[in-house]
Amino acid sequence: MKQGERSPLGLYTIGIAALFLAGFFLLVVFGAQSYRNTVAGQDGNDETRALLSYLATVFRANDTAGAVSVEEGEYGQTLIVADGDTGYALHIYRYEGSLVEEYAALSSPLSPEGAQIIAPTEKFELRWLSDKVLAAETDAGRVLLCARAEGGGAS
Image 1 (cartoon, rainbow, N blue to C red):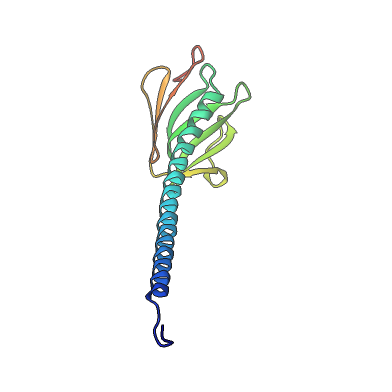
Image 2 (image 1 turned 45 degrees about the vertical axis):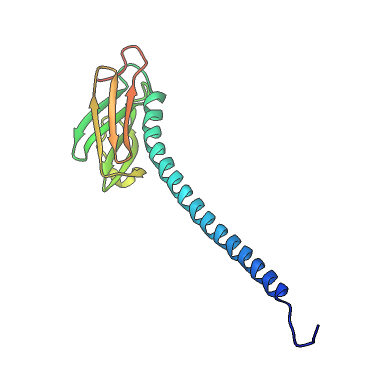
């Protein structure tokens, strides 16, 4: 073999290695993009479930006779969940594009400036379907809240 001749085997080896490297790089890029989209979807689902689950948890935690009521006021519908016989209640209502909660005396006026923000929502509608079933609808969806206590429900 002469000094000036080169073997094509070296170029083929480099070409195949470059092809595998490019394939690996594309696999990593597309895999990362797919993972990012999956996590974004999961985060959205978690946020949706969190708001509806919160409403269900508040309702169930105070499931006593006559503890839950819905009132119309200057901020629209307000879900009022009384805290036993203390004279205080949790007031949940929509204010400036967010669902907020406020723990205050039953007879006190609402003070949204001091209320705790639960989640952003443009929709908060409450409707009694029966004496014991309350439907709560937000941007995140709809949840049915069912009173289990004897005499619980609409008051």
